[in-house]
Image 1 (cartoon, rainbow, N blue to C red):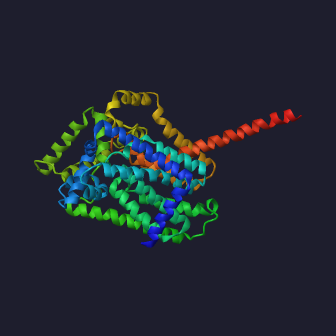
Image 2 (cartoon, one colour; image 1 turned 90 degrees about the vertical axis):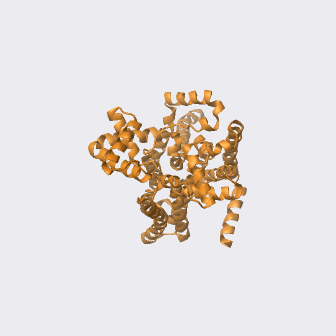
Image 3 (cartoon, helix red, strand yellow; image 1 turned 30 degrees about the vertical axis):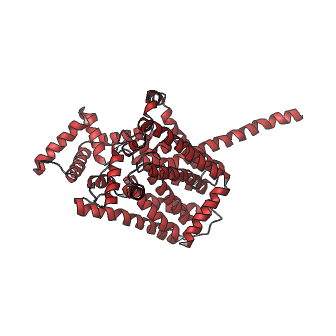
Length: 456
């Protein structure tokens, strides 16, 4: 316990003695508080408990935990337990009010910007890149707005990023405590949002990459054996799997289905594929699925479990009959969600909708929503060209992992790719700093002949 207190004390000292950290944190928190103040003025405080259907479910789940009734099983089956467990202590201490949670999320989001700085510093060892990455995270409207709603995104982002930094620290420094803490935080993040459920596979690739590149890119670090790094990685993954599989086993006993959550599965891709091929609405296709399942299983009404099994079976059928069309739909949804704009201002700042909604349409019409992607790819290419392979692999894996996982839901705006900010903030910073350094060198090369001529 004393060590934990000392660690927290050291962190506070670091934040108060590093001016750049203080500026970054205050900027991030200030922008988020500003949005919250304006939003409260427009919609009041009670509306924050129902800004979206998912919010309503999370609130019901947390209330059931506080009361010990566990009455909203539908929500737990759809979303998993993580964010409800995050909300429950606040509801227990302060009642069912959104403001204590949102204020805490704002602080977490502010710390997450500092973590982006630390993450970039760990990978690039460039203060300029790290500061720009932190500023991009601090001023990201997606990040700002998600900290002001009762949704799992901000908590997932913070816990996943902290776990990732600790995992990298463990691989570089070799401390066992980093692997244990990383496993716990990453596992809890995945229980908050199932989008991270396949991330442990990426951790193995990262561990091998760090082992291959650490001597060249971190010569000042102790030389660790591959065995030690892989044991640490397996410990970390084991903790993640233990936490996640515990919930899956629980769902098997309660619902007969060993799943982490039932949200955002392959069924959505199958529905969109048939919608495109047959010209029917998604609702009509779903109704056909229900009628077929009811006739086959001889049931009058579908339960949550029936709907899950039906969706999975129909997805497999569509995949078998139209594999290339499914792939086209999947890639199309990835591209759309990867470059979608933020829509939360419609719920948080409804008085401004007559202006902000047309602005959103204009951004998409002019293609400005693709700037983030192109700058990120430029940063990734620059890392490859300059042979910074460890940074290239880590950021590339984070970016493309979350890009690959966002095709299973639709019409949720930039929220879908929010975890990808962990990578794109650093990649764009790399592109900016590399461009500046290139232009500076180019100017110095051009300037030399001019100076020589003047001297002659």
